Image 1 (cartoon, one colour):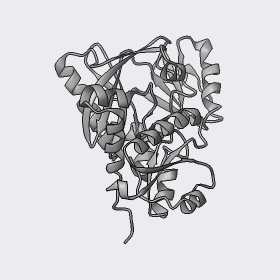
Image 2 (cartoon, one colour):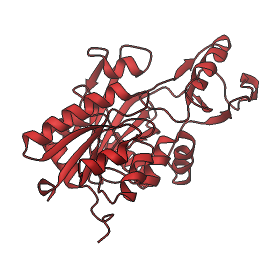
Image 3 (cartoon, one colour):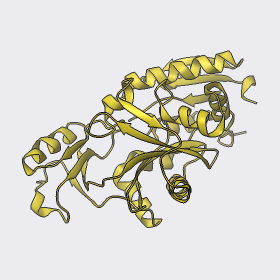
Image 4 (cartoon, helix red, strand yellow):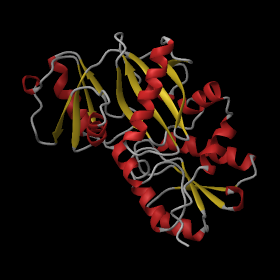
Length: 308
């Protein structure tokens, strides 16, 4: 159906993850063109509405990451312009991007997430005011790719971690550190397609480990007993559904030695680069090449928003 439409691959954008998005978008655009789709790459700026109209875009493959792309903003614009698009809608995108509201949604659905406190800029963050102790994780409420995230093991590290997180947002989360295997679940067409384990060379799966070749080992399938492997996949699907996501996503978990699955976040627009995890899960877990994955995603774009 989508081969009869002009598709705009939206990439780049205005967030801290712009460089990653440029790589994702270039790979997606190349895959679409190779399969005979009429696709053009659109580097997203504040003139996006004008560009979409000028290029006569009829459907959008969103390959943006971070603010103004993954948080519902572009999704809302596309709905106003009556352009079908890939991935989740406005509200699920906004919820997934906002770590406080997504954690509240997880908790309401009975999904485990690390204990936390939220602080606004100007509020003092002191260890004695927390209901849990060291170690801690400090992160901005609305950033992706581990931008601004720190692990605090000593009280003397807390002030610098808080300052770094506040550089990226006016709200931050301070979470209890949960020790466990870093496991990520691929979701495609509302079904889990596999679980991959990440073993980073750094202390955790930070920005460098995510986007530098050789800085993290990927183990597929994740090293979990069969029952726990299935449990992790179902927890990932439950997190995806708790936010109302659709199409596809990647859900990040920490799986503890006691078999608990803590949800870190749902990525509604996971990376589509050569080092990205969803394409690797799709290839190894569902037998889908990168091109086939891209085709599945664009063909699942919601046409119902088109006003007739």
